Amino acid sequence: MNEVIQSILTRRSVRSFQEKQISDEALNDILEAAKYAPSGMGKQDWHFLAVQNKEIIKKLATAAKEVMMTFPIEHFKKIGSNPAYDPFYGAPTIIISAYEKESASGASNCAAALENMFLAAHSMDIGSCWIHILAFAGNDEKVRSILTELGLPENYEISGTAAVGFNSKEAPKAAPRKEGTVTIVK
Ligand SMILES: Cc1cc2nc3c(=O)[nH]c(=O)nc-3n(C[C@H](O)[C@H](O)[C@H](O)COP(=O)(O)O)c2cc1C
Image (tube, rainbow, N blue to C red):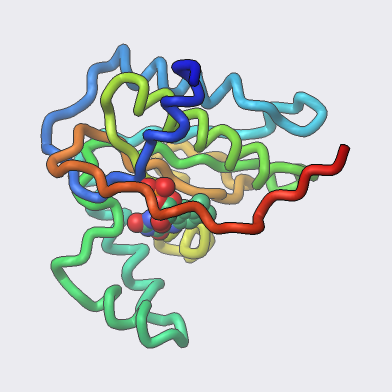
């Protein structure tokens, strides 16, 4: 098995991070990997907003949790109202992957970019996790005003966020792969 495939198979979602920040070089490599993802018609109609400020990450988490509590789903209400719950798991870096509202394939392009980021991080022994909360809370007035202030263009929708940092615990083992998810026709 070659190194790339080995890396794909060993990447895991990390949900516990050290406070130590990743280097600027590592951040730039991760963002460069995002920018080289495939995009529909090669449009690259995405925007990546990297935040490395602890207070701002906390502010976003708090605003997003408030949205979570308005959801008619008991589970969301419960975790949203838990003061100890941090949707970004204490990651020192978050990278928001967003696409132009009008884009025909924006959400897919951003998903490809997110996976590129996860794999780039993993290749440097940096942990990461897809965080979805801003995908459904990103248009809330309070959350949006924070994002706009940070420089996210207003006509961009959020696909997902990468929480990035050094693991503080060993990542869990991969779940067994489901049977019957592949068909090969020759
Ligand atoms: C679209 C999407 C949304 C996700 N949202 C979250 C999330 O909000 N919080 C979280 O902890 N993990 C989230 N994950 C990570 C999944 O839970 C994780 O990929 C899955 O459990 C498989 O584990 P692995 O990534 O280690 O293989 C998300 C993954 C995807 C693809």
